[in-house]
Length: 282
Image (cartoon, rainbow, N blue to C red; front, side, top):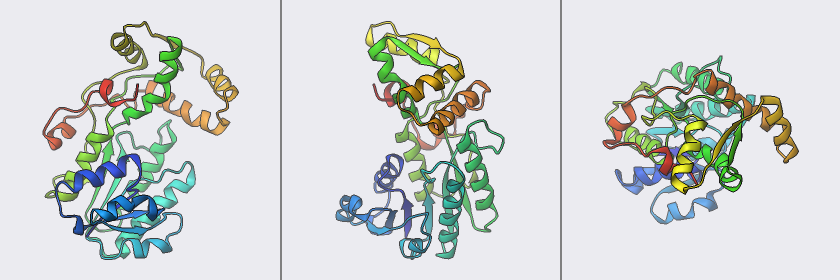
């Protein structure tokens, strides 16, 4: 049985949908924190069981009978994220999975300026040490992240943010399809994958230009100092830790950590990637 974790989340739900286009529902199981939220999958014939990375005892039942497990990285910030991911990987191996997959990131690195990348790097290292075939899906930066900035920019005509750098913004839909291919395929994505990205690099200056073209209204890119942006964000109600987390993304972007593209994603899905202009909310 193929087990997918986080199957009610933005990425996990799309992975299951794409997987069900390729394999029978009876061969798919999902591990979710709240089984009631996956009732629609159960109605389609998918096995639904409750499992929580932060309560590893629950994963034994959730992963029972697994031939493969896709661990969708924990939506947790800080040191707890590594522990949660490792707990899921260990549970998958204990369940007898012949292959374990993990949704990593294109910029996974222990010295990244963006905290999640260290989490991914440490998780990848643990996964590689388990002695089972594995795939670390080095996903591109989610294009949906742009939605946090676009709404205000369209309201004010100003895209205000710290200095950034080019990013290969990539659609959830494309990454979900790659994961489904990896689960249903022939192992061509074994090991740590190449960066799974869209082919276009965009910084916020380019995003502002695209918004202007799409709306017919000028959207100006306004660069502000890091601490000025942080103070304003906190003033709007953002917790200080969240502000620091977000600043890490900008600092990593301007260091060039996300300025990478690779053709692997388009080769795997057999079509052009969804452009950021169509994949991010507006």
